Length: 306
Image (cartoon, rainbow, N blue to C red; front, top):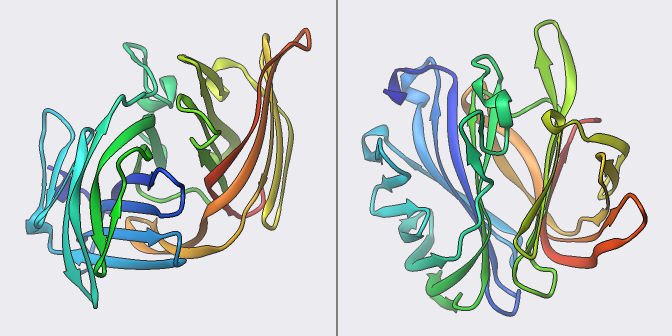
């Protein structure tokens, strides 16, 4: 049982934008377990990009019901699955209701000895944080009513990932966009300092999905970071493997402080933007450009100095 764990968090991150890219939301349902059971709770955190506002809704553990055979989370009157979500929130002066359905989800491939984005690192039982990409890109159908305003998300694009463990890393950089002007193009970047016994190392999971192909640049595939420069709201990266070179330049804009787990407790704070822009170029080692373009409505976070 999850509730028997101490200093543990589990959270799912839904990022959605409407067809015109004007109304973006990050919807984060999750669980926070700490030694003091009075502070353990479930939650739904919502980040409204157009207003640069965030709200944190708490629930007793008794209202957190997660299926054991598939991802199906019932949290109060709210439901979250891979195929969509239903919201019915009325708390702290905020109301959010409606239903969204997803189609054409593109997950990070799961294999026997490489179960998802973390590869064989997923088998290590002592890491402080684990990461999964449940959908690089998918279509949306439906609408949500937020504080009396109904927003049609039909024709928009969505992204879905998951994190779990005890704490977010002390240093990390995260970047994601699937708004490159065409469907089926998505970038997800996660770079973090990983504690390793008494030492640490920089681990990374970078996936670029383009025209049905996932280009993977990760620690466990042997890719190398050739350049990593994160300064304030700007970032520049260059990653290479034996066949490809991925170059990234990103610029963040307005953001808010989201709650983040520290030893299971949601007492940390991280600034996140949903209005960043990211320029991407993927090329072969012979110089042939596979893709080059600008992604908008990007999510971006940076914490500490990598």
